[in-house]
Image (cartoon, rainbow, N blue to C red; front, top):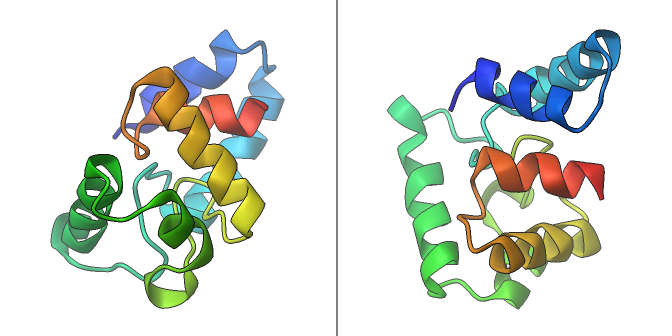
Length: 113
C-alpha cells in the first residue's frame, strides 16, 4: 500500500489536489491510509489485517459476517467503515471488480460511490 497510489487513484477520479489531500488526511487519521487495515490492528505489518482480508476474500468470512461483525468493533479499510451498509457496499464493490476487499482500487471506487 502506498500513499502515492492512493493519491493517483483519487486524482484519476477527478478530485482536485485540495480534495485529494483532504480525503487522504482523513484516511491517514483513520487507517494510516491502509486499505486493508482492521480497526485496532497495531501488529507488525498489520498481520491480523492481512489474515482477516484473506479470509474475507476467500469466503471463510461471509458478506454478512464482514458487514455485521468484525474484530475490535468492526472498522475496516482506508476509511474504517463500520456501518453495515457501507461495509456491504465495500464487499460488493470488491466482488464486482474481482479484486481483494483490501485493494486501494476498491477503497477509492467505493469512496466514490
